[in-house]
Structure formats: structure tokens, C-alpha cells
Image 1: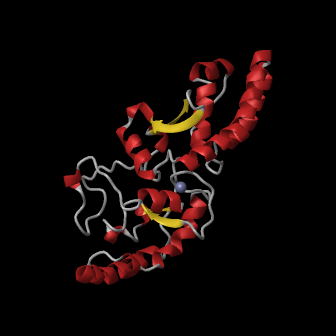
Image 2: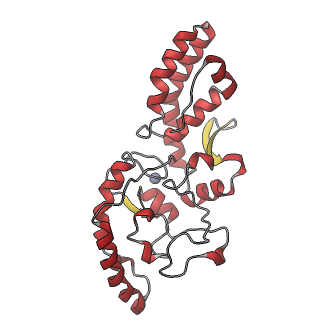
Image 3: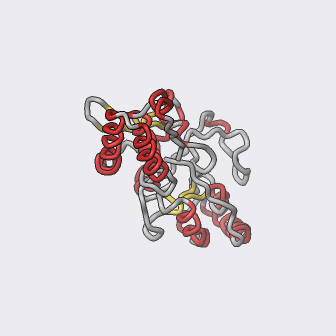
Length: 253
Ligand SMILES: [Zn+2]
């Protein structure tokens, strides 16, 4: 998961929000939360989110198309219906993260601080789920090479409780995703890592820097496949002290 910059609110959204809230308030008063009654007008902003997220799921970083993927409510609509049309609450997620894993879960540090209906977020709410549009997920989640299995696993960074909760709620360590991570590392990252290692062994400083500067910024840009994973793989094979020795920068995605 990497930071998402969703940009400015689309100009049509405030009016949609006003109208839809008024309409849904009546529905909610009569029969409680009804997902089908949420309507689809807020999906007009889906493509904008898709582009701003560089065509990737906001949580697992899988490349996806607009159609067939979900407009995600960071605060689930089932618990926070009045935020269903709020720009700061909208993201684009794949169905595996959104529906299969997260669903209606939204754990808080203190459950008694949960917003009451129609209160604006966040007040004193402290979500346990990392919000990629409001913070840098790299602070909470780290990919670690598991020596026993040889696999790269998402783990809480520095024993971050929010990192652990986010991995759990989104099932970021689900089997199929681990296989995609593994394929990414072995196919796209390790060949370059080995090439750089070889250049370092030869000791050609200029060649090391040239190869690094040609490749690393490209694979750590936000459009790149699994940029957070690539970042931690590079951090693992080229730790800070070594990067300093060779004059290599490791920018966060
Ligand atoms: Zn996903």
C-alpha cells in the first residue's frame, strides 16, 4: 500500500451529496441501512479516483480497471451512511480487498468514540485502518522476507498496531496476493538486484550509480507495480549504510 493523492473534490460531488443524503435520510429513518437504496450517483467519481490512484487498488496495489472494481468507502457506508458521498471517504479498491476482506469492518482504538449519525469525520475517532489518502502506509506496514518460506510477507512496521490491524482487516497476507507479490519480486526486482550486486562486486562506482538511477526511480513511482513491496525489497538488499557508501537514494513511493 502506498500513499494516494486523490486531488481536489470533483465539482459535481457537493450537489450529489446534498441530494443523496436528503433522499437516503428518509430511507434510513424508515427501514435502517439499505445498501441497494444508496444509489449509484456517487460512482460518477469512480474514474477520477481510478486515475488518481494510477489505476491501482488503493490497498493491495493490484492494477485494475474501473469496471468490475469497487468504489470503496474508507468508513463503510453500512456504519456511516451520511459519509457515502464525501470525497475524503472515497477510494477505488479491488473486490478482493473491499468485499471479500474488509466488508463492513472499521475498528477503532476506542469503540466508544465512534461517530454518531451525521457527525463529520474524524472528531475524536481514531481508526485502526490505515487511510492511504491521509497518511503514508509505509509508516505502518513493512514487507519482510520470511526465511523459512522464502516469501515476502506484509508485517506491521515497528510493531505498529494499526499496521497489524490493517493487514488483518484487508487480508493483505492472503495466499493469492502473496503469490502475486512473489512473482513480482522474482520476475521484476531480483534480476536488477543481482545485476546491481554484481556491479558492486566489481567495484565500479559510476556504473552502480548509473544503473541504480536508471532503474530505482522508475520502479518506485506511484504508477509502478507493487511499489511499497519493491521499496522494502530494496531496503532489505541495500540497507541504509550501504546506500550511503555508494551514494544511492531510496525515495519513498
Ligand atoms: Zn486490492
